[in-house]
Image (cartoon, rainbow, N blue to C red):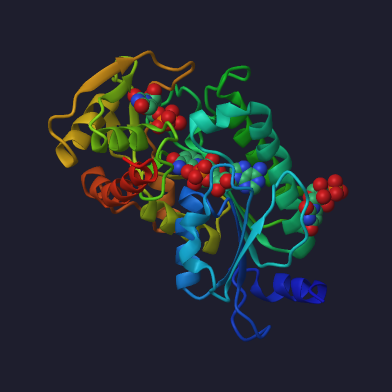
Length: 343
Ligand code: NAD
Ligand code: UDP
Ligand code: UDP
């Protein structure tokens, strides 16, 4: 019977969202939707390592069991194959809601499914949070700023988004998800947290997800040219995954709703990124120019003053230190792939 506990939970544990161990005779129980994906699996590792019970919900669209296989058999870990577009009943203390494809190639593959995931999936997770009195964290995105007219971007900027473009299923979907979170917060008293995540990279990214860092790293390892879209002068700011995971946990545990930019302010053009990849992996790598995609934002860089001040968080790993940390993982997986093909 979890209902009385949830009530108590609100009264006793709600200030921090963490149920003190012992009061209810059990550890905090946490749901991570999208936990089989790139960011989600690193977050799950951190929560398991600090002693929580973790339930992952994932439909394996872009996620992989391989990302979690080291936790199979751990009694504090549970994996549910489930699509967040459908309702689900669970009893937990916190919900980290990550389920949604993040790479443009994946989210454009079935745009209607992407928007359903963002809208209906987020609605269901907020409905769940409301029913059980759980704290809810949304992983929104820097894409809510669209092709920004303010640089760097602060949380107060409302964005410059095309509502009918190829990226809209994702950026308008996330904007709606933010709206839903705020409406459940204001209207139903749900404790919500909103993170606006900037481009993040690290081990376990899908090898061929089309994102620039995974593309360049895989291409350099495979001795293929690095594909630069457009003139390569567009900018992005790249954050290493452990910095993001620390930021997400600080946000969940803190007192502030947000939204908070979580990103590394180090800004690079795609040509500069290609240079860093060459320095790190293969100085003889070449560059091949390709046409850019529609509505590609020209620049992106987070202003993280708010997260620094209120969450006491800032990224620690610069690009030149983070890139080498994903290269071994990519090398091993590319090697396994080649062996699988009998090469
Ligand atoms: P990812 O594609 O590796 O992970 C997403 C996970 O969600 C996958 O495991 C996928 O199978 C699962 N999923 C997708 N649709 C689902 C559904 N309908 N039901 C259940 N599970 C579903 O992406 P990621 O990079 O780990 O991103 C995680 C979250 O962070 C996403 O919400 C993304 O929008 C957000 N984000 C990521 C970045 C980044 O640079 N990685 C930037 C901004 C925002
Ligand atoms: N929901 C869910 N699990 C729950 C509670 C709700 O999946 O434990 C879903 C529910 O099916 C609904 C959505 O969350 O589609 C929103 O729920 P809410 O109670 O806020 O709204 P209502 O059901 O009244 O539309
Ligand atoms: N890009 C590139 N080569 C690639 C993949 C992407 O030059 O192989 C560019 C893309 O046009 C964009 C930037 O890299 O300007 C970042 O793209 P990504 O898909 O990684 O993320 P986004 O920030 O656009 O969501």
